[in-house]
Image 1 (tube, rainbow, N blue to C red):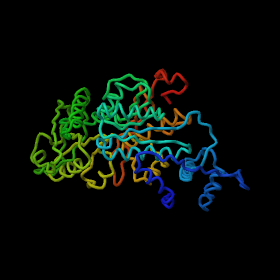
Image 2: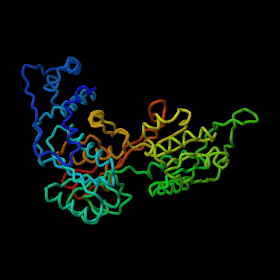
Image 3: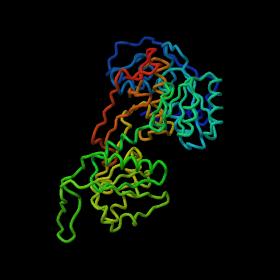
Image 4: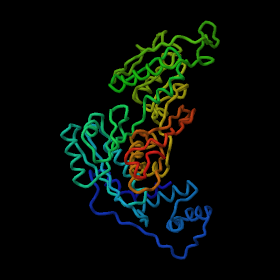
Length: 449
């Protein structure tokens, strides 16, 4: 919609490659109302946009609009032209990011872009500074934390691994730190100044296992994360007394050439696990003439490329699957482009990226960034949204609750259909009791919305 304004974003690309913001402030734009009919309804505003009268539109629409589409347009242009606001901000909007670029790879770039894209759409002066470190050793972490405090920052977004996060949890009491990559399950802390934003894989697995029938065949990446997900899946499946039983299976008897109807009596639960090497491309050993996995539910804890290989080889080796289940790992448009529809029949994916804001998606896309499918970038956006609210007292865009400083996500079940993911089961935003208030919340800003 606004690709024709790409040139206006060239300074942002320059910024995106830098480790810190320029000390020269970006000039603010103010619109003066001159001979404009302020009695302009939604149809009138749409007409101004259609006629290319952007500044007339902005002069009239100075406050939030009820029409979501028009308000998104308003926020896009406010960000593009850096239009100044007369609203008073009690505390300066300054946010630091800790980026261990050799550890988190491309996320050192994409998470900072996600935070930057959010801030430029909120129509407020801000300072965002990236503090790059080579590793997450205690010495490096302690040094960067001191540097951040010396420069007067209070709020920090830190896409770290558990190693680096643990250093901050153990030693930092002054700064407000948000980890978009860490779930509170991974670290033991009750610190009121530490916030966690990673999705909950255990909750996603728990949402999927009621759909599984026995045998449940778990295919997982032979990494620490993959092994942990395998263990979570076995535990979740075995604690659930109900076994999903479809009324029929997609199979044909070679002798009779009629649909095969299995017995519908509940069966004893059985879990079969296969650890997949990163370099493995041929699944023949797992699938060919393997009777014990026939008509099972398959749970994929593998990266997206590996998952597309597995899905295609179900078809190659005539593996009869009741269904295929997966977590956020495979909520990726690559799944739609790299597999055939028949390969992904009866595939169900748990997804926690449920609230999409078109303004922020568009701003990120102009920076070649993704918050619609990439959950770490999405979680980084939620973190800066939370800090923005704490600093400015302006409403959050993403009103997801925190519980004990862990961000809680709704979990939807989606299934690929054509070129999109269709929602099969809509996620519900968790409800948190209002007495879930941190020490800082007592000052008037609640973690519950």
